[in-house]
Length: 185
Image (cartoon, rainbow, N blue to C red; front, side, top):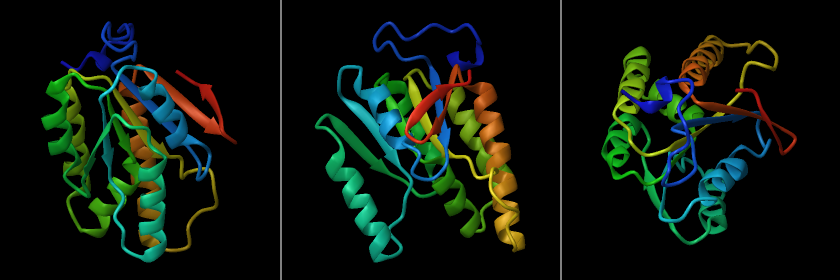
């Protein structure tokens, strides 16, 4: 059983990180920076699981900027849809893992017309066997206006459900507001 299922789970004696931390917030709220700070407060090496895909020049530039801003000590794993498999593979290594971000992963799953419910179930199942402390990053997409098209509304709903499931599972949850972390769990 993943230690994050136990609400009173202590921090890992190796890293000081709790078993599972969720960092959530709006666009440009400081989620990635805060998540990286949490992980890099522990000794390296650290695992960075990136889910972004460079589908255009602007996104390629963002990805390159993120890579260049990271400290030495990060080992990057890029996955679009195979996040559960990647977590299962890395989780036995006991090295802190940062997943950035669940929202882009969900986008990849939906646009690839994969089974969303099955993918989320597989993600949760992969968390069950993880021995490494994990920090997950996700966007809070439910605070804005109701999207005008069906796909965007479905995405908002699926992202909200995913975030709720992982927040319930997490030992610690931070909501980022204007670069400020607010611990809500």
